[in-house]
View 1 (cartoon, rainbow, N blue to C red):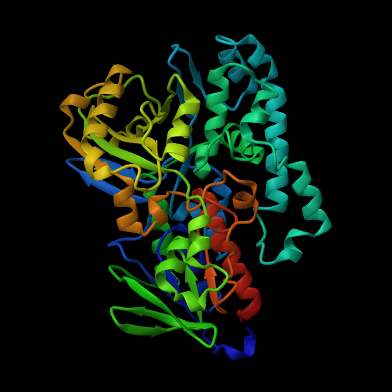
View 2 (view 1 turned 120 degrees about the vertical axis):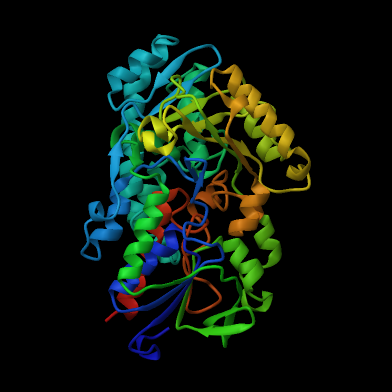
Length: 500
């Protein structure tokens, strides 16, 4: 596509008002692009939605926030201060890990504090912890320098000498669990640090070792709360986008991407065409291609190839409002099961809900009392779950599974659930319906294979000129800061090509 083929005021349609789409919209609008964002839901946010009921405030979606510099870039690149739109605050300690043997490890930035807690159940693992943190930091530095800050649009980007050298340094064919076993032996430590694979929707027994870097991200860079909840990030993006002239339209279902002579020329909604010079799809790449493009327009991504991708894990969510303050919980608390490996066997091999999943609970009222009525709590509960398949029916299992989780948490010391004033259940089927997430997967495709980790679907369509992708399925991957980064990378590239 040549610069002169586009009008002076470049018209861009972005499908989806999630973090990736809004991030791209802000950057492009600030550089003179005429940007319209089309969102099928009633408000912005994609998978990240605010829910309020009976004085309780919840974030239905991502709640653990890291890498604040990636969110800040959205504002600084257009001459704004992030603190004028949204406020982040550090959490210390940030995550409480509770194991079935009664051990508790609160995530702390100090390696000495972490080692002293691990030593309570394994002096050997405690002695190895500092060496592991050095390895995690090394992996993060390589990732930040070589993978997270640039687009991978072709083989030239992937086979440069610098990229090849970096690739071999990150142990691409070593699993996260194998790397952890070089340092640790106790199942508590292996589960606590292996859980980072789930941050990208994957299994610690199959995902590559590169994801050990997330231990560095949380323990060294830190975990942060967001004033008003993580949905406040979305609201800040939407506000800034509006100030820059972005037209965000809600309750608009895109039915088709219009392709003429191999070029995206707009989209069709409710039977009406909307013209554009560039189309950016902020939804799931696989859903976009399967549902919005004709097969003849995407020969490199046939239906059979789409189906060959392994989706990421999904999640079973409960929003529970109680009248008690939950003294056992931190802002983030994780309850681990007895047998961690069986959870991923159930999800990825048997494709059914685990009998004893890891249970994550976000308790924002401990940091922001206004998130719940006085003395109460607003709990976001997440259990890892399989992507949608014929092996499991949430319509049949929805209530029984919710009841089981409620009973399990009660037994683990989470109080007041049986007298909850608010109780909502959200399944992978609901996620698929509301956000068009492919097979209800949270993170798009899994990173259980090296190919799916390092050769994700490109941000630029191989078949359709002028069609670009942002979000968790494409480069650089899943997670709120990384999805935000994908929007920045695509916008930055388009500005270089076509900006004024």
